[in-house]
Length: 539
Ligand code: NAP
Image (cartoon, rainbow, N blue to C red; front, side, top):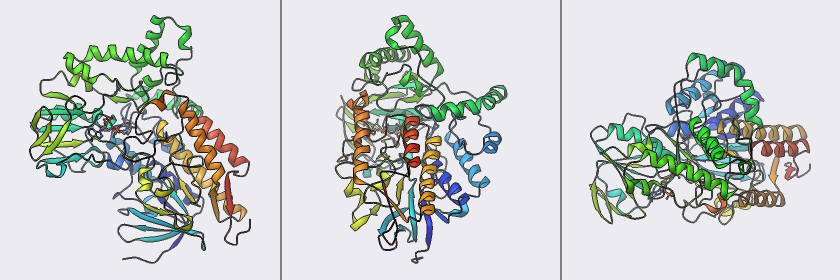
């Protein structure tokens, strides 16, 4: 067991899009960087989420690194929305091309990190006994990387196969001829269900809350289209970097109020036909103004009614507890139509709750269904879960988990008072999950590395969010959310899917570009809101 801490300039936790970007650019900056990753290789989200049907719902051409033009030119995406294997191959290619793996230690899950005020360093320990020290600790540990297992009585007694979408085995899983129970109808469940149904003898979908899903309208990218996309790429990137969500798409430019009902429907139809998550913001202010949202919801309901034949199943699939788009809208390929098939059924857990999991299946109030396989698509402890699972101790040994017990306070989403030199990339208070994470990750990594370079140039050894600045930022994040319909919805955005988690709206809803502009202004002004210090205590 290696117990001697080797001081590095920085440690990056995670080898997903963001962590790899940080490692590549830290090395280019001449820093001694150590990467730590729980998985056996690079990929992050795309390493773990190998479930059937797993694919991104941001268009492939946009969901890729923008920092290297040659990389952009040499990689050829094959589908409009890339599958998990293709995205993983892309990240492996990036790792090869930029020799990323030599900086990483894989199968190293970080268990603890302690700040030492004397040396102004973090000491990091992994569950396999590796100990390392560094001046800076960059957490690129994922916004949706801490899966949640439901606490259903009898879960451990099930005698058949059990899979989690967020930890799907690398080896092929054969569902042919099996009776499968799928619990969870968020993006993961809705994406995987039709693929599972195509193989299984029987599929029972256990739905607690009905969700909104829009057809993805995925298709292969032909050579002509690819050539056109390549030509458009610089402009797509420009629009993405200047947009509200890191993609080139914007809402319909004409205000909803000025259009007649038929014209509004035409806008919804156009958005629906384009496919994908953008239906959630077909019009400006759709997730702010209840009237616009209601019109979108009614349009959705008409589409749903066209897809599902059985009236009871249709009623059960109709969302009734939140405005459209205020939980992450889902995208699918044949999810609703799948329920017309005789071997697929829906159990509405609001009417017929689960009593227990038995060795042979699931017993709901109405009776037991026999199953061979259980698939849990039950979500994540989002944005803070990966961090609070670790024992991260800042000044005076305060545990991050305790510091955030009643309120998740951050400065710009990337720094926490009391935790110097800890930079939480894509953390609570960043736009992260509301944007194209490929570009969001680049922005976060780049900003953190520039702060580190600034400190090195100025002779500072530490940067810490001031309590006042963090209070002001956290209040701002909450106020922006309170002005929208998101605030009315229980979701993983607000932590309400995790028992005991503070009910704050976690991501920053102010938009990708406004967020970047704010951070750039802070950098230009010499990082107000950060207390910069040095070992000797002098500046
Ligand atoms: P999720 O959206 O949180 O969905 C979890 C599902 O499990 C919900 O339907 C939830 O029901 C249900 N559930 C949880 N505990 C349960 C219990 N004890 N009994 C019954 N049902 C239970 O998680 P996810 O589907 O993994 O998606 C998370 C996020 O990851 C997405 O919103 C998206 O941002 C991202 N993602 C993206 C893609 C993509 O790009 N296409 C694909 C997958 C994931 P309730 O709603 O009632 O809590």
